[in-house]
Every structure is written in structure tokens, then in C-alpha cells.
Amino acid sequence: MNKLASKIANLTHKVFYDNKVLMVFSFIFAVLIWLVVAIALSPIDTAVIEDVPVEINLTNSLPAQFDLQIFGQSEFTVDIEVSGKRYIVNSASVNKDSVKVVAQTGYVDSAGKHRLLLKATKADENDEFEIISVSEEQIEVYFDVYKELALPIEPRVIGKENLAKNGYVAGAPILSVDTVTVSGPATEIDSIKKVYAEMEVERSLDATKTQVAEIKAYNENEGVLHYVTFNYGNSEITITLPIYYLVDKPTSIDFKNTPLAYIEKGFDYSISPATLNAGIQGVDKNTAPETISIATIDFSHLKPGKNTFTVNANEIPSIYIADDINAFTVTVDVKNCSTKTLVIPEENVNFVNIPEGFEVTGIEKQIGSVTVVGPASSLEKIRAADIVANVDLTDIDITAKSQTVAAKLSVINRNDCWVSGDYKLTLK
Image 1 (cartoon, rainbow, N blue to C red):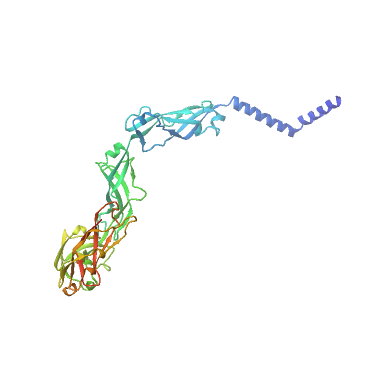
Image 2: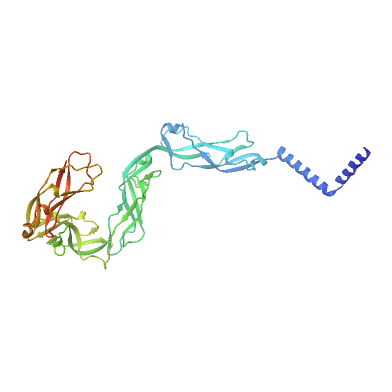
């Protein structure tokens, strides 16, 4: 025992009289004292939890009973000041998840802007901190009943007074769609006076311009409506501003379904007015045509003698008429031709694009009194077998028992004759 006591005494003497060991023990003891003081005697401190989301729950709420929804801003955040012992409020455990902020909707029973009081609470009531204040006591939220409406849309170009450069003219803007579905708060939807697809032009143009349009709804005071959404499918709405090069040229016509004998030298014609001041797209002074074509005349509409046609100015495609002209009179003089009437037999009728499952069982009504036009010498040799009727059944109603279809007639084996008139036959 004396030896053991002696060893312990020697070891104790070495430990307590060794400066390095004493330093270690002193540090550990100091840390323990600091922890005790920090936990038991820690001073009260404050901290701010930033950007805490505000919860607006409409499930089973009073607004939901009135079919009211939130429009416009629906996401809000606030800062919350909390207090507690310093080691708690300054720790990472006190964060956005430690608190909850709820907007009170219990008194929202009508459409319009409402100020909702905010209530902040601890997520866990056992947390050892207290909520002192919230950066915002209330938020402003717009409530209304949802409404959806299909409305016409109009193009509107905004920008320079002179949309086209000198020598050019701008036509009426063209939209890729005619209507748009507008949805949002009923109060706003009901106040819509116009829906515009807008295009901004920053400089005068010398070529047609197409761009994605900006859609806006306006009330009767030209105020832009908010909270509304425009639904037009997956495609963007585009607006096209056509730009035309101005020319002063003679008028002309074209022909189609022209027999071979008349391609190089056709029949004489006259047009009134004979000249036209108009704009043409895609050309300039070097590429502008010598004449302005106002119509295409089908040979099937020509008979011997003078054939007169009226062409409405607003039906002429791809040109801008600068003159004050509403219509043109076209006269085609078919000379040195006569007519012959034939009846087309059923075997001369050809059917194309027959739908699957459809069968042509016969022709209930033949194509009779077919008028063939041409030089008298050629008409003497024309027979019914020289006339062929082609019938396109692409759009036929396969469920109908009997229906009338258009037939396109042509002359074979003769290059200076044609069939005049429109013809139909009835299938059974």
C-alpha cells in the first residue's frame, strides 16, 4: 500500500506541477464554465428571419364559397423579428421553417381588392423563442370570380407617322387569328371594350414586316386591363404589316385552262379603267411588272362574241389600290368561234380520289347539253367521245344515298376547242 500511495503521490505531483498539463486542464475547465454560463445565464437577444412566405389557403374558406379566386399577385413574403436566448435565436435551427405566417380571409365575401391581416405563429409551440413583430401587418390581394370569353381581336400598329418609306405605302395590318379567348376576373372581363394585337414600328419600312404581336385588352377609357390572360393555343399570334411599292401601270388579265392553240395568241380584251395607280408587294423600281393583273379568266366562262366580267377592286389579291376605284369592267372578244351541244355518255366520266369504303354504283342524272366552243371547222369533227368529265370525290358524303357533285369537262384530241359552262351530275 505504501508503494501504491507513493506512486499516486508522484503521479499527482507530476500532473499538477507540469505546466503543459495544467494548461490543458485550465482550457477544458474554462470551456465548461462558458457553456454553463451561456446556457443557464445567456442574455436575451433578437434576430430577424427574412423572406418568410405568406400562406393564403382558400380551401374550404369563405371566398371559396363565393367562387372567389385570387388574381394578380398571390405570393408574398415578410420579415419576422424573434427574441430568445442568444444561442437559440442566432442558431441555424431558427429559420423560415420555424415560423408560419397565415393571411386571414374570413371576411372576404365580395370581388375587389381586400386587405388581409397576417397572423404569425411558431411552427412548433415548444420552440424556445418568441415572435416580436412582423414587417407587414397586412397584404392587399385582389379577389374575383373566374370568367372566360372568346372575343374578336383587332390589329393595331404603333410607331412612326409614316410607316412606309417614300414611294411605298402601308396596307392594312393582317392578323394570324381572328379571335382570342380571354380569361380572368369577371369584373375585368366584363369591362373589356377592345382586344388589340399590337405591333411597334420604329422606322419607315420598304418591305413587308411580320412579328409576334403583343396582346392587350382595353376598357372604354382606353385603359389597359390587368389580371387577364390570353389563350390562343400553342402558336403565337403574329401581325403582318404589308408594304407595297407604288406604280402607275396599265391593267391586264390572265387566263387559265387555256387550250394550246390560244396560249401564244389569245383573244383581244379591254379593261376599264385601263390604267391603275397601285402598290405591289415584293418589288421595286427595277423589278416592277409592266402591267397590273386584276383578274384571271377561266376559258370555261368564255362563249363566242363579247364576254363581259365585273371585277370588284377589293377582291384583287396582293395589290394595294391607291386610286378611288371600286370595280373594273373586263370585256373579252371571242372571235371566229361557234358552239356545239353534246350529251356526255356515262363511260366518259372519270372519278378520282374515291374515299375508302365508297362505291359509285351509277349516275342518276347524266351531263347533258354540254356546250363546246371552237372554230366551226373543228366543231364539225367533235364527237361526244372527245369530251371527258373528271369528278373529284374528295369531299363527298359517303353516307348520303344520292348527291350532286361538280364535274370538270375538257376536250381531248382538239387543241382549239373548250367546254363552256359549269356542270354537275347526280350520283346514286
